[in-house]
Image (tube, rainbow, N blue to C red; front, side, top):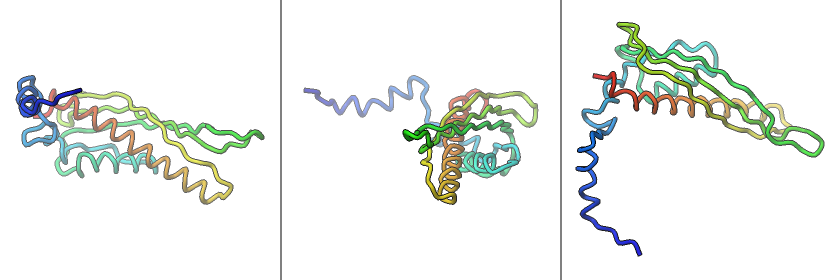
Length: 162
């Protein structure tokens, strides 16, 4: 039987503070320096529009651009479910974003990387329903990829955010 010691639970914040842990969104967290300061490249299509909207949801609309986010989005639709007559019943939308965050003043690359994920949708016999399901899957994919990139930026932010 596992016995919980309440004192260890109360001492946990002290242990985390001693190891250098600071909450990113805390009063003096590194994420505060990013809010409203990340300028993403202008969207050129629906995918990039959804991606930039998701980034702005995480970091706020740009008020005073200090950091520039450049990105390249690639997607691929792949059949994932088949009937015995080889008709596709389900699709996977695989996506990849190669990104770089730079200091706009100096042009120095601060961090960057690649985010990859996928979403799925069911094929239907109705054209409008199928197109709607595909568009919804693409929007969900851009949100997933933006979340991954936001987490990578937050993890790297103590190195460059004031």
